[in-house]
Length: 336
Ligand code: CP
Ligand code: NVA
Image (cartoon, rainbow, N blue to C red; front, side):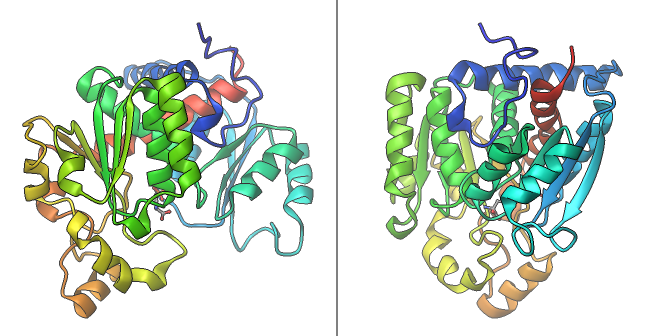
């Protein structure tokens, strides 16, 4: 039996693969508990007097705000360090930066490009390090997504969860491995050239066989992938750092757009739609307007109709970033 108030103390949170199924589920349940406490106005200042560093090489709305508000709710002080504000990797190595930050802070969040950087921060800082997104994984997002699934279906095991879109980005990797760990029927629908790397698929298959108990499917056939799905998920077609790829991604991924026709192919009337956000569901953004002018599209990975439908739980999911990130900080740093 996992004790969330003891068993995570001092540990880093770098990828879901590093945790057992029971630990993964325990963090999700702890987040639900903290969500209820916040809504009831019950104080939960488990990190009183601690300081945490928030390192962001890439931009963020949800992750940054969730870490900042969580820190304050837990009684800790958050310090934001943006890409242009510290030397990380430019004038000072990640190892040296980690050693310095570890002398001053009790925990460090990192969002950036390289998974190796977040691993080095954990190795050399001596304090818990939390991965706020790298090119490879987005583990705090998994807790929020799966809490949202549990709130809607009351369970995770046996849920059929289909991700449509760029199958080789941080979200696809993370959902494949986390879904396998949770015992879901986890499916990725993507064109072959955008399938996850073979080691990620193998990792997910091994986890499903040895620990999860569900199934793993990676296919180019979106109709096969969405049949019977309880959850349809998508992400942007072009991730942060690859903004020169709009033309090729639009060509490859248009058949995988989440629209009313694709949602109907589940054959179920209670399928929910999730998206980590931000989403291109209209042209109310600079990129959206640019894509509209160049390619004539009024949305990309999801239509405005699906995004705004009652099936869409994306803002519950966004709120759950707060409660789940708080669970990670409290479990790894808290005094109970
Ligand atoms: N979903 C997510 O990570 O959002 P941000 O990029 O705004 O943090
Ligand atoms: N795949 C996206 C996720 C954003 C939360 C990106 O890396 O930009």
